[in-house]
Length: 243
Image 1 (spheres, rainbow, N blue to C red):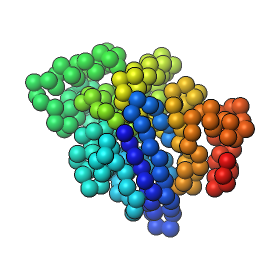
Image 2: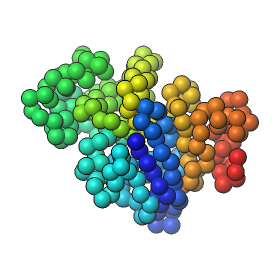
Image 3: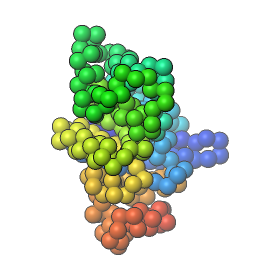
């Protein structure tokens, strides 16, 4: 489970997070939505320990992401918005390198890497250097890297970015399988169709605060909108006003 309590973070005079609190439960998909600059990426970066909050707290399975950052990292798989692959390593080598960073024993790394390559259908380019990969290929390898150690908590920042229709369908099926396996999945997306199809709960952030936290149906009911995109826009426009 991922828990966020009263997170605050400023960059100079800009308040990126102004008291954000929410929980993402095991066995559920929680969507983190908001317009550009709302603070969602800052919240995700704090959760995967590359930023420290000014105040407030966040935990991964009860492990504080600031006080025990290394231990918290071992409990999560992360797909950041920028894949950050090593261009002169093959896809397989990129995945294996991260498996070893996560502390997997050498005698199981090759087997686990091959398993995730098969699972994500990247066999055709697994042994090519990642320099020159398409955006979709980079996303698949970065996702494999995030899942290779079989984490209980998964944080995905716009995971379908650059994927074609078939790859997107496969990704959605994978997310559903991870949910069925009891994983906690937190992901950010601008694709409302994706959010409506996958999310059990949605957290909408606006101006560094939680504007609304509910199921897709609950958000539509509370905003009086039949369409989730319309409901999202209304929640953003009414941020700070109780719905």
